[in-house]
Length: 588
Image 1: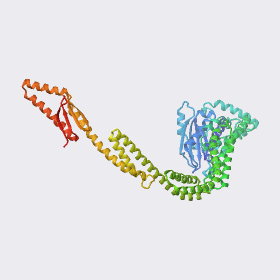
Image 2: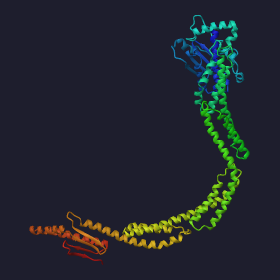
Image 3: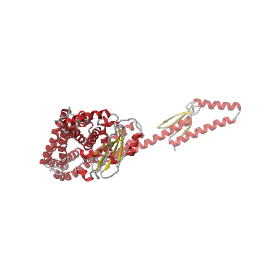
């Protein structure tokens, strides 16, 4: 009886893992699961027909999750998971895991060496084609246990923590078999075995809110719904004799309600998808717009019934925001479609006004009005969409009006630039005159040049050309005069610099004055006294070199002053300290 109960639990585990694959893997209905235990080693073989798309990592993850959610008896073992194609002897993928770490021994390590896939096989293994339409059922799956050797009296238990439980279950099995029929009881879930269906349903029901919050796409939501539907369907297998019968019925109602709420999301998404597809059509009319409006309303209605307390509320609100925006767009399009023809008529009327203004424009302001009128006309026609019935006529008018608008823009731009350039010329004239009054001839010359250049740049066919021509000759004359005075100013500046350099020394040699009459230089008393002292010293010592040095210095000073006068082209008068003229140079 112990071996039979253990086999029944392994069969239940295999069925449960197969349900996990069907719920969580897109092609899960094509997979079958077989289980075996050998030398304390859990072996799980997952098979599928040739040609089925397989995400190996996902398969291993789903089976591992299923193992961890199963009764604790199976969580004391090291497990090996194999993937194999039906009809092929060896697997193509393997995954190992330890559900709970415990002491290992040489027998466990040897189990991997001695393990053979014949432990899973029987003489009635179905072929690939049979599995395609009818995956392994419970009767077929039970054959995976036919090769497992029966427990010996002196053998170690298969599960470290399962001995006492197996004995108790064996006794219960005997009693129940005596009263209800052993064969029936042993094959019914949730009677003498742990109720895995109920545990899965409890988990989904209690964790529903957390699972929903993790959902980020319709695909993930569909996966969760499949899990809920499978769990709800499995609850139907629990017989009325089971102590879990009442709880299973309550859970079934709760899960069904949750599935219905999820289905509302999919119903809304389906209506939205159809509405989105209708928006891709190139042509449009009022009837199609109304159909699209109805579809968006059908998409919105089921989502609005989901209240704030539901875990689906955030996802529903996200979709509602998008769907309401699309409905609003359709409503606006319905209103606008009725207005496009009115826009067309209005644009034609405005174009007549633009043409009249164009023929009478005589100023920059007039041309600005012409441009703005054509712009209003084109702007009224441009928004008419391709799908509107007024689109064709609108495009014809745009192709006619746009060249007129471009011409008006160019003329307005020309007049604007002419007005701006003329204003710059006038401003430069006023600034130049101000600098002349300050004797700032450099700035005056710069602004006269700006005035002359700006006046010449005014377009010849613009409205400001005549006024600009009146500025050219006076500005040219003023520029010549300012340039002459600037040249004089520059010479004076150079003369001043030369005089300052010549008159400077350890003792200041001279001072100077520059005016319209020329340059006046006066020897300083200190320098004159220094010369006298040098002459007295030479006379006392009888040193002719001192006298020669004084004379040379005076000669060099005179030559330097003459050169300055000549370069500046101005007269020069040199005075001694007593204001007596000691040298004078006049212009030739």
